Length: 358
Image (cartoon, rainbow, N blue to C red; front, side):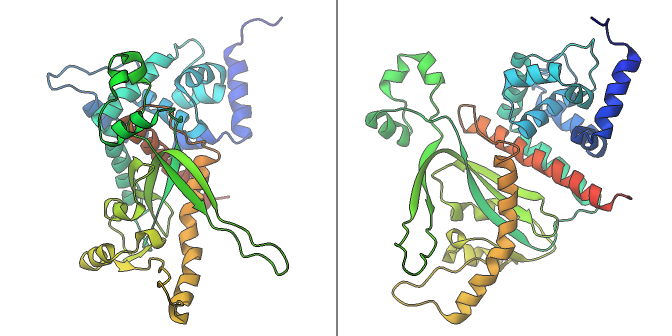
């Protein structure tokens, strides 16, 4: 067996990782991690001046651990193991072979304090401000949509479900605190419909598919020009998409707003006009009569624009594996908010790569 690895052995490994195109090295070099120091310190500071739950690790280092979790769909235990196992993770965090690695409990506590402080929204806004300063203004109008983020399914009785919907804690759970801690009373069931494609001539007609889903929704708005998430909100999965339009829209150099039919309502159209937005939201088919050719042509050109936001959700649910493992909407907001922020990080690196010299 060979002896302990020396400095030059480790350095050679890092060189080979760089030559292989380590994505974390690019992320580390381009994202201004220092801008998150003050917001993190403020979020973890108690009113008496004491540090609330601050671990014995640098705050930005711990924040970068959450970024790794968001990018690679890691639980707290998996994150602890992977940081110790992967040189690319260690280099990203600035840790050496002799440095101690945050354990799963430390990671959980750090995220818990950020979630309870509602700090992820502020961290997201801080990076959005950096995007604007570096020239990535929100341009070209906004595209709005929502996607369901799955959570562990709850096996509840009909009586328990009725109590939860009314905002009550089922009586049997009150006597079992351990069971109550494992019950998510904020997530909801919903049904996602998939429209069938028109059947070819001579073939049997296809039917629409209804897929039940349990969890939360990530409502987001991206700017059309750069594709960054600019506004977002987390609700339970049963929340109506159209009611969240006003919550996710942000300032943009373009006035147009694209969205599907769920967002078209008299209330939304009035609000958009009042606040200087121009609605390019998909039209619903009039009841009892055919859609006009003008309306049909307008609808026909909109999906090409709206599809851009589907790429965002596909990235989050595909390579990033977005899934809510936690209990309650406060923690779900932190989890989904970090996924939105991590997506913007990777999008920022992509844009920088486009303008970098060959």
